[in-house]
Amino acid sequence: MKYIVPLFAVLIVFALRSEAYCTLSCTSEEIATNTPHCFITSIVSGTSCVVTGSESLVQRIEKVYLTVDISSTLTAVTVQNQVAPGKLEIVFSREYENIRTLTLHGDWIRITADSLRNLPNLEYFTFISGIFDVFPPFTNYHPLLTELILHNFTTDDPFSTIPSDKVSDLPQLQNLRLCPAKIVQISHVGISLLPSLETIIICNVTNSETAFQNACPSFNNLNAISIHEGGLQDISFLDCLPNPEIFEHLNLDFNQITSIDGLHRFPNLLLLGLFENRISSIRRSNFTGLGQLTFLNLPGNLIDVIWDDTFLDLISLKKLNLDVNPMVTINPRVIESIPNLEYFKTPLLHCDCSLEWLSIAYHTHNLHINPYSLCDTPSQFAGLNVYDPSIYVECSNANSPYECFSKTRETCNDGSYCQSTPEGFECICEGENNVYSRMNGGKCFNIDEVLAKPAECDGTLHLNADNELECGSPNKVPFP
Ligand SMILES: *[C@@H]1O[C@H](CO)[C@@H](O)[C@H](O)[C@H]1NC(C)=O
Ligand SMILES: *[C@@H]1O[C@H](CO)[C@@H](O)[C@H](O)[C@H]1NC(C)=O
Ligand SMILES: *[C@@H]1O[C@H](CO)[C@@H](O)[C@H](O)[C@H]1NC(C)=O
Image (cartoon, rainbow, N blue to C red; front, top):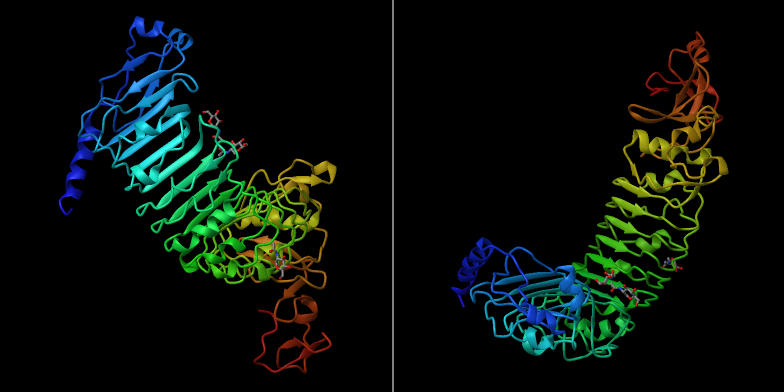
């Protein structure tokens, strides 16, 4: 086994240096028949081979067979169908022991299970928008499979179930994607015995939850799961994962999830995707322990309120998407509590002065707000970006008592208002002669009053418990 690895490396270099091109060379006799076999002898390897056919060829034929005939030393084959949908079939008519990577994509490209059988050492198989005759028995014929990507695929036989003995028991399989082009079932042990599995993506499978639960005990290395269109209602099916602490990506878009109870079991979760689900209420307790989470994706849910402290424990959060939720406003404290936030997408909002902080955060705090974050109401602002300064021109002088958008979560009291400065946000008092003292309870003081310090006071002025200016001891500093 030891010297096989360098040998493979040499072969890859050789394969990539070869020219990759395909020509369909059907004879006119072949074209005259309905199903011509167009043999090609040129090299198909390394870079992508795009098969095209002239229009007259395509119109006259039902199917083109591209029989791969290449040097037995080549290790990778890539073919893209540009003949016409469903008209190109790839044929391996003899065994190719060296082929480790096969990539077939585009427009219902076809391959049969028998052809695939001629690649016994296949490790990486990517099949995008393709059709098999029958679902291939990967388990029996490709024991070395490391990556199996089946995206938007179907079969000629009535395809309603992914059978149990075809994708199970593959000891080396690390990455699996099973996304049929229409909704099917998966046998209850259809994906079991995959001890090396690191990432799994399943979509369009009605019973993914039970299939996953049956398979779960062998998933010692699993760190990323995507289940789309799987009808999930909660995440309890993850309870069976043997190593929750290595788990990093959870993507459950297009399900019916109402509860995310149990997330605290995944302290190293980086990404949580819940696009298009049925989540109506989120609280701080739902995200306890997710100190590593960097991306929270919640568009298309039923969330109508975000509480100030909801994201307080998400100290690593960088991206937050709340698009398409029924909430109409967001308090600045929600965002102030996320120190590392870089990107934010809001739903349609009601843009009144209480949202001025969005403009301030965008223009002076470099918070990247997605440009499709728009105002819905009032009607004169509908369609404007939530951070458009023209919405808030009337606001900044309005002396509004709302919280200042700042990391210190300062509240501007007593007639002061929030203003951005080059240093960040500050509470400012109306009138030239008024100064703001954060230390003394966040109040405005008249500077004349302060300067006219009573002669008998040799200390500094400060506020007493009744909020009155008082002569205090010299070591107190009233206006930091
Ligand atoms: C599936 O493949 C067909 C044929 O190429 C294509 O028209 C369709 O858009 C694809 N669907 C998805 C979801 O990729
Ligand atoms: C899932 O199935 C639906 C309908 O059956 C189809 O429109 C969609 O393209 C499929 N998704 C994928 C990724 O194939
Ligand atoms: C969040 O936690 C509360 C209990 O603290 C629970 O009632 C609610 O269903 C949880 N929300 C989600 C989406 O799981």
